[in-house]
Image 1 (tube, one colour):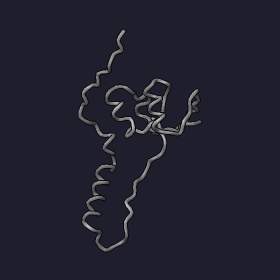
Image 2 (cartoon, one colour):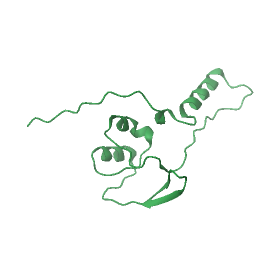
Image 3 (cartoon, rainbow, N blue to C red):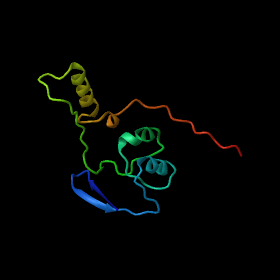
Image 4 (cartoon, rainbow, N blue to C red):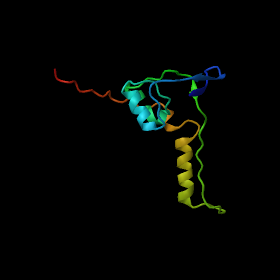
Length: 119
């Protein structure tokens, strides 16, 4: 498997990755990474909480992987869309605009206290 990336200098590249585990289920990949079973290529929207609480760490800050994803609002053509349609499109544009809400800095979360096993 090969991961394509763009470096901090804007130059594209690729790296061949291999390992004991492979999966195409995004939830399983996240759980494996949380369990310490390896490295996962994940979207920030899926692991933001884990990055904030420190249970996962970014390995390649400044690098981007994959391609951009677009979201389209599709609705019937009318001279003036309904107010609720316009409001929803504005909400989408604000939430998923140039910088999606999950990539914006958030308020600091209280660290989670992990339970300890009794010995």
